[in-house]
Length: 326
Image (cartoon, rainbow, N blue to C red; front, top):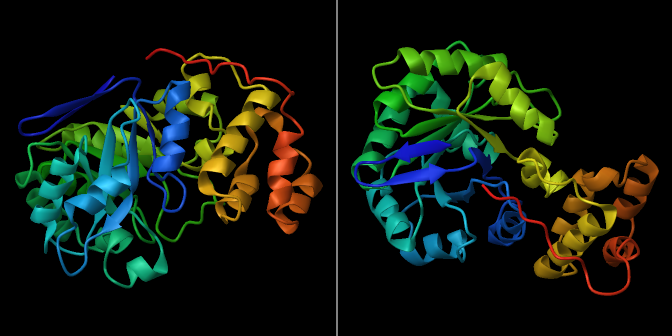
């Protein structure tokens, strides 16, 4: 169990396994289809970037979406503290369980605007942003960051700056800004951050992120690094049942996995580019193990993707979803 404590409100995350914020992936549709299968403790929305005005309450509410049975945080990204307090207050009014701050996005367009991972060069600005957000709400405020831009040399300083400024927890993606997702995550940095947080003036929990491929990796990350919780990103798109399996529930069958994929394709619309994004990552129930089959779907017409999954679902009513408690 993970408890995030704010000035007047707290959030309990049980089990301590979270769905990561991923632009273009973990939107409200995806979250709503993941949560019912169990094993998910909480989720964080895709980031909303604060620019020339406070983020309106209606935008916060839109990105949060309807309740899904687990706490959902709203992630905000900003290069400084301008309009931040009002945006945080609007996130609270919109129903966010807590507010997460993005200090990790590596995208060049974000980096060039001195937001996301660009702030890793400025721990004092991270501290000011965290302090402003924490002072604007009774909700917990968390900070998500990478281990550094091109080096983890200032990792301890970065996590301590956010914690001592008022963050209720730190989420560390165990890669650098320059590290691609195809390169392995460095879990040793999680252990280092955990040690740094234990020694700083205001110890707070650490959520580990990066390098999760299977349900077994969720358990292994906690055992090897000492993190208090685990955040799962692309592996949830590859296997939407990873949370259920990690919680001790059954692994999905090919039919069950295909039925989930069809529900997702129906929800996003037949022409959405997210259909091929799903195929690119998909490995649920051992499917698409043949690279040639995956490439054929990626190169072919989008409707063929639905046809592929339809062929793997038995005729007749689908079996009821299995939910794992916790």
